[in-house]
Length: 189
Image (cartoon, rainbow, N blue to C red; front, side, top):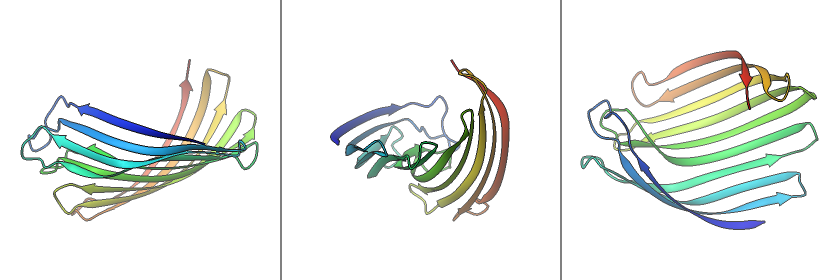
């Protein structure tokens, strides 16, 4: 086990103004404290919690502060099965008129199984909550999917992916259902 402290400072600079003409440029500072943990090569975890504060260049945009989270856990119940869970909470810029940013909270769990040495199958489920600063809009998105990967060799893999997403929103016409099917070949060095 190892404990750590992670200070973060980011400058965000966008080429274009938001939909309402306001600048989304900002400075963000955060401080997180956490632990890295490994239990007999069966479970590895990295989790940190802290506080973030974002100031925007546009004087009409109010600063945003709040709880920051970042964590990942990898569980290896068998030699062929890996289960990964993750959580994060941070600010993100938005193009929503009258809003400088949103606070994004994401939870995800996924499983990967090595069917054969060169064929991997996977499943995933996720939850994403966006809270828009300065207005009462909240978006909740639930998602899930399945994937198949064939590792042709060290540099080439073929894949197929099916994903389903459902977003509900407090904004009028802000919700949607989305179905995505992807197939392709990936080259890597």
